[in-house]
Length: 604
Image (cartoon, helix red, strand yellow):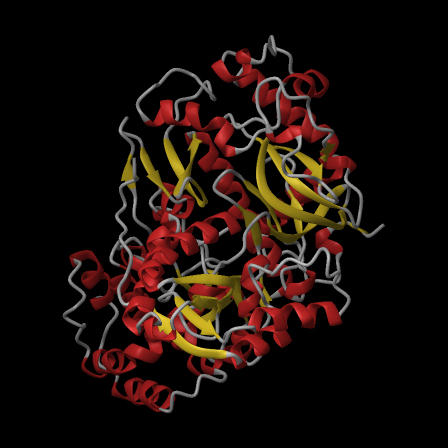
């Protein structure tokens, strides 16, 4: 069993300051006896929420012990809680999930019926999230000394928010955090200084925000010691933005005047405070960018960068080769593991290879259980609410190395035995606290950025698009898909094999382009927001392949050992030989001619 202990005496360095030493000591103490800490957390949650409607519904009777809790409270998914969540959204202020008032909804990147999931939260959860953030730099400082001598160039953005019929704000968890006092008025910390002014981060216009943040990063290029974004895809979009806008950026730097497209008064003021004419820097930016050679662009522009701080686990792993190319192979640091529902844990070895990243769950954040994943049927009784028999879940302290589990959480905000949907593999332990490798998000077929599209959603989109083919007596024989990430932003590629009764009536290019848009209109709101507001996803592409192509795919799979009786065409492909086969059979390619409909308001 891989067990590690004592961060401060590890092969890494020493705590950078007394504040760091206290944070590292906290990590040591909280991970020594996770079982006892978890029982304490469960007692606190159940005591705090004892009078809530949800716990009383299952006749918990004030019990706070794990045995009674597990025997009476069902394991649930989002749709099981949706009627209660809708009551809160519509204005019901009674204590349904939490004895504390629901302060806002955090919108998840996961969806239900095409809309973002709404996760109720309470004010004290912000303190808990801030606690986890406060542990990140003390750990990083063990591995990368001297970060207090420079700044971080982080591309951070707020996203659209709305209000529920009952008046509660609904917004992504990071937007909530960036707009909070914890972020806006945080005390000065030399180890955590950003180049981007808060005004630029908090600007809702994505172009103005990105432009201001990039310009400030260029002005302070020698002070930048780390470059980052939340997701790897976000950092690549920033580099693409530089590639497209370097001439105007260089002009602003040369003249000391700000692009008139930056109209937000607070953003203009914050940037103009540091913008002075610098023709030498402007010439340098022009020389580096005009060749369009992006190899090593990050270290060429920001030569003192020590690492990139981005999430490259899970679906984001597809961007690692491009990041390596752009940075000349700088370390990729994945520092924390979190979701809208709960912040879970941190990476205690942030400089490790992305394929070996593991996150240590902090046992004070929530009560954690783990559903053994191997051979688990998603339609088993544990997915049902009400009178379903309880599933046999494993406690945090009892997971086994090498085994995979689905994460189940009980939070202070009132989520009880909630299936997050993440599949994790136990990689080892720090002291007695398990460390998990993120394997994948359950049921996600395609993902470029924050979007997550499952097989059911993809099938619905294909079905809706196929209606446009009926007048041509055409139908889709077979299809598959993949997430194309060589373009920035990335986009969905759908391979179609068509059957047309009369070749003379083959659907026109215009019709097939409209099929692309019809698919996009059918996809969930997170995807459509990425296309319309965030520019994080490019136009969907349909590639029509020759007749018989999917038979060739099947023959190839069978030649590699697949059973002809059990073979099912894959709905998503990422195996290079199959993709090469498909691409060699493409007879036409089509793109969505417009952006799909999206507004911040929820449908229905």
